[in-house]
Image 1 (cartoon, rainbow, N blue to C red):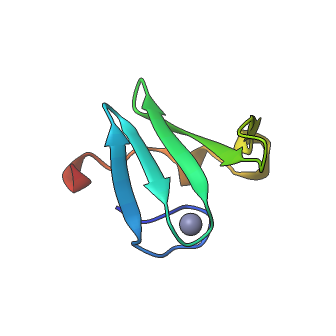
Image 2 (image 1 turned 60 degrees about the vertical axis):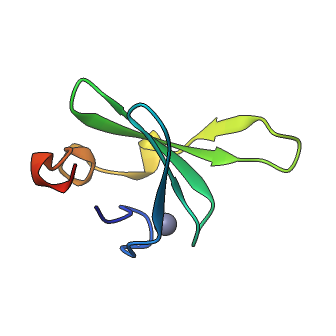
Image 3 (image 1 turned 60 degrees about the horizontal axis):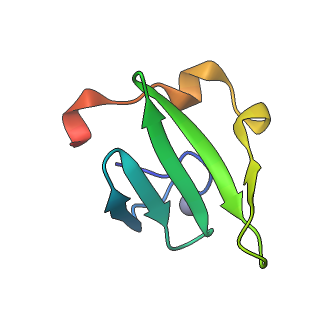
Length: 65
Ligand SMILES: [Zn+2]
């Protein structure tokens, strides 16, 4: 699994269908086969990054599980 933001593979699993990129500090959730990206702010709140990506970038590749 590659991070759609930085294209690196420093992805850690933090929950069911939830991953975290240790390189760019974003949280990745998989909902209905589509990746949803959130940036974790310093105060712990989440900011959606989905608007920054095309749908094709967010299609979950089933072979990475
Ligand atoms: Zn990343």
